[in-house]
Length: 105
Image (cartoon, rainbow, N blue to C red; front, side, top):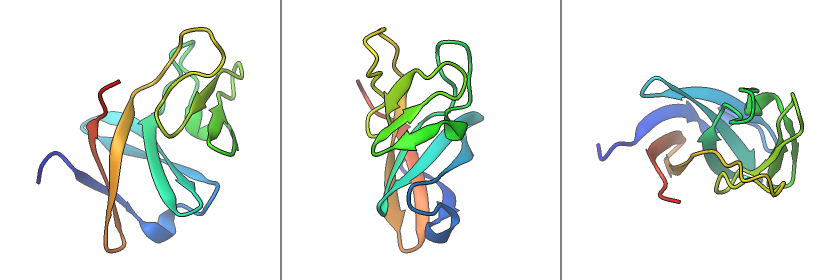
């Protein structure tokens, strides 16, 4: 199925919320931004903080441990420190949310 894996259903993640899912043994944070879903690697590259537990403001999530911030749409760090996290393709099939291959940066 072209690398996409069913990880949740649309009702599982409310708008403005996140959920940790596992894809190929990797923890992925799945975010719902006004009905559009985004997926990034859940572990902050600075010291391993769980991004799904971070503060989400608009399309930016801040690590709960040290406040490093990432754009959930593409995994890019926005603090100027050079940090970024992997982002993954997401698609809907009916009510199913599927996460696919890591995006090329």
